[in-house]
Image (tube, rainbow, N blue to C red; front, side, top):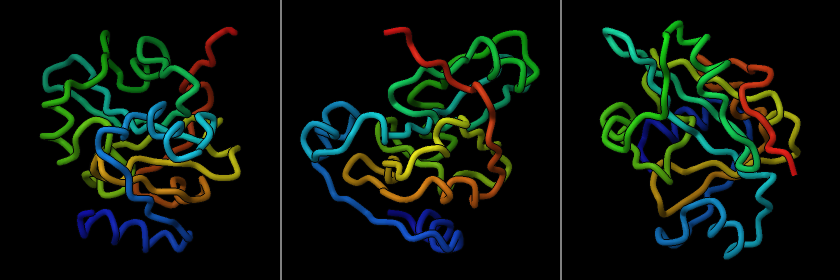
Length: 161
């Protein structure tokens, strides 16, 4: 885990736990099944890009059982006509973290961090740990205490059952 991630986590004052995991099991469903966590407690940090010149980026945190509203809320907040998930290469270039391990802590200082309102309603959340070999478990108040964090209603949609 990078020093920047640890420094930001520690600066929040919110207790957290680092959970080591097999990198092959870093994807949310596999991690939850192998390590006994609930999908509904898993929060994914997703980098999005607004198609403009220059491109604009944001980090979005949504529960794993929901879908990020990229073409609605995200696109409008970015102020662009089109938006999409950032590619794996763009994500690594911007954050230094690979997909499957991206976390909300240690992101660039100028990157907006949007948190779906449902995330902060959980008792605890499981986040990426900055690499595919670990996760962070904490109260969701950890996210709100990070730089550039903003809770956004309806950032994600819950799929119909």
